[in-house]
Length: 293
Image 1 (spheres, rainbow, N blue to C red):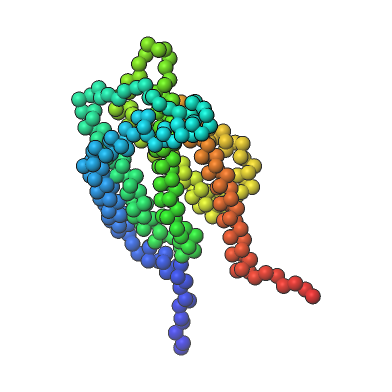
Image 2: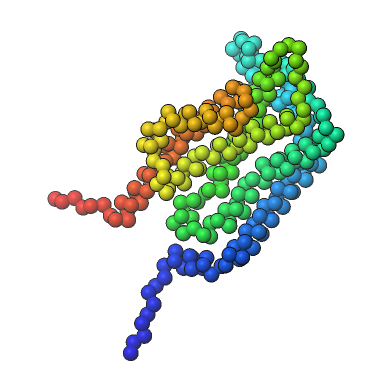
């Protein structure tokens, strides 16, 4: 009697079977090592930032608090070209001080950790992606090809936008704002660092909108028509989000809302691109109908 042959196992089912063979503790162990390597990368950059105290604090962190910061110098050049002194910022009327005995030391550690996270973000995300991607089907991994590159690129652009645009203009607005001339602006170092951190990281993460829309379009949750239909509602949500992610001043809120609106419009084209590619793949799979002559 002929022996029954088992039906062939597809590559996708085979990958899933391999995943099932790994127990819960095995997954935790694998995740632990990915997190350890990511933490080591953050720690390396954080230690480097901690040891480079003069450059990190004098140039990077305190740079936007001085009129000679590159953003302010470019605004002054623009003011000269436009023959308008409004854009030129020559004074930031505030001082930064530490009111706690451990204030400067704790902020030195905190700022080093944030800088470590920012500079190691591409590697950290790559480690997390290495843990997630084996659980995806081959088709899903194909769709997510380049995810690490685009996420890291948008994160870096967001950091630069937050640091060179939002932060200095927000500092300028808040330093000039007074409820009464008798009240002097003397900002605590904790408040200054936390505000800078919030502005830069908020900008970095909101710049991930096109990536989020790409994956939501892949699963059919979002379409370009829906995004166009609810554009006005999205603008309201963006303004509210800008108010939540930034300090309570209109300059920061507007500055974070403008790129968000631009990213929203770009995301519409991203969603349309995804749907077009899906349609082309479907037509290729089923074959185009033959024309009757």
